[in-house]
Length: 234
Ligand SMILES: NC(=O)c1ccc[n+]([C@@H]2O[C@H](COP(=O)([O-])OP(=O)(O)OC[C@H]3O[C@@H](n4cnc5c(N)ncnc54)[C@H](OP(=O)(O)O)[C@@H]3O)[C@@H](O)[C@H]2O)c1
Image (cartoon, rainbow, N blue to C red; front, top):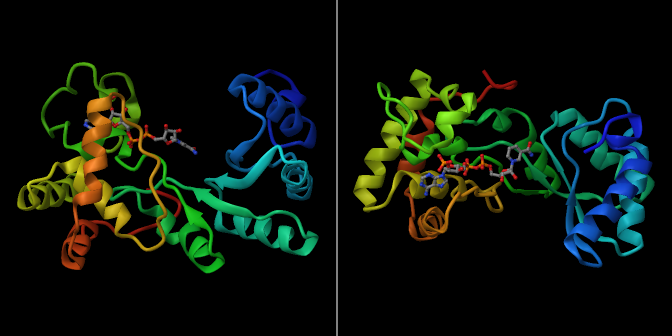
């Protein structure tokens, strides 16, 4: 949030300062889950973990988590905690959806093997998997695709093929594409729960309907079939 070497990254100083600032803004005494964002090449992971462990020991934070890094980096962090007897990351926040499956070839096997919870970000790929976009049409008015180039980057042949399967399966279940897309994630054993990003209470209600959609293993495979996970992402 600030410039300068002490205003960014995962140093002890920045983490301890920013937790106090967050507690002030939230008006609370502690944070249930405190997650680091990505990897900081300029700070040894031992320093970051010692600072996070201090937060847990002093009651500022209950659990710690991490987000989006290489399998090597995350494994190193977990084993450093084990060696130093620091609090361990209990969850990982990776990008994961039916069209963003690169973490199947990177972080997800680590999470499975190390019993770490998985809370995927952009589970609807920023809205692409709701089916609101069409191959040959402008983005709908007011949609993220109107303002963010990230959405159009999803418009690949393989991703449209995944969406075609999702739309067909949604028709069979009398559900929406968003619900089937979220149900696909929930059907993955490694996933704890996705971090959904609805923009309205209507979208929230629709997305919660995913809990009532039970996909067969054959449907789960049909959605996955058009893509082969590769890391880094294509
Ligand atoms: N750790 C990281 O590096 C990282 C990176 C990115 C995000 N995140 C976290 O992940 C959270 C979720 O990411 P995200 O917002 O990209 O999630 P997402 O669920 O993939 O996309 C949310 C967007 O999809 C559309 N949408 C959602 N439900 C809909 C529905 N039922 N019908 C129609 N459109 C619907 C909305 O777009 P419209 O605006 O078009 O309505 C909404 O803004 C974020 O809040 C953020 O905290 C973390």
